[in-house]
Length: 174
Length: 279
Image 1 (cartoon, rainbow over the protein chains, first blue to last red):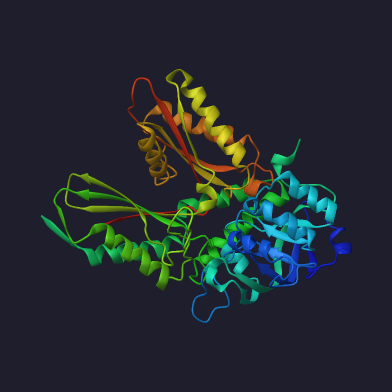
Image 2 (cartoon, each protein chain N blue to C red; image 1 turned 90 degrees about the vertical axis):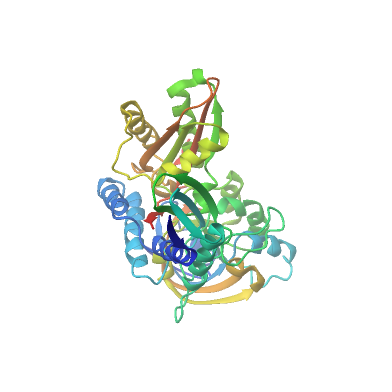
């Protein structure tokens, strides 16, 4: 596994290839459907710095008493496709989720030097065990869809779309 | 008449919903382990290892298997000699509410197609009631995540489309879903009935024991044929290519109008959360 510190510079991301396994350590911002709709309305005053940010498409279960987080696996990324492009334009360079996305995301990754990483879908318990801290930083009223700042250690992902236009998905082989 | 208290129903639902969110059925874990052993690609193997590790960590009770702890679906077979002392659906919903709040499950249900305000306790559950003979109350309970449910589909075929038509529709549904429904998947296939009956058949098929083939030999062979056909797509675990796209295909059939051949495909992700409780 390739260790990858966050936030990551574009020059580092350029070295990654689709299919490689990476271990993330550092800050991830949790945001999914409703949070994306709100982020799009506040692109010029976002609740966290977008430059070189890593966004994780997740809505965790509530933490049990005394625990840092609840179960925290990725949700399907395709629902964030439209909202992702303007965010990539504002500097977001890592997206983490699961499943295939629209070809426009592959193109945007290549154009802007961003990557789409895949965490194992449904492995919410395993991935939660890699989260060292979690706090809500915006849109608390959205409950599980609130924006969280997560600090992760050795969080495992596969590179799904790299900065060179390659994809890991079988359905993209043609 | 045998009386069943509504409190008994609520606590059975609560315990079942918490339990299925932390523990996969043993037969299912066995299939995941077999799939992991049979994959030759390192990446596919590593994803399946994640899933085997994940269910072990979840079974310790701190984190649910998946953060999408789902919408609760209940099939209740109520014996005609059973007297339920109160509002059955309210009792089921009280169990779901308690499971969500005390079990720290994710509230994933919103109240309206467009207002989309979270109900904060996963109510209402989706409840299907049926009267049967006897004096027991059988509850089949599932927690269904949206990732795989969103990839499910139904089509009204022509009778002349036959087995081949059903096969084409099933394979196309799985192909277009790709990695999104969190493969390795299980397929519940409904064939027959009317439109709504067919969807229910597919959902109920997911409760069937993995190791029991369909009692009708022709349909048992068709289950195997469909399993082979969808695995030939090589979508693989989480869509990254590999031998393991689907762990099992279960068919439920029902008589239908002579002019109809409805087919429904309910896709289940690898976190197959189903159980049965008899009161």
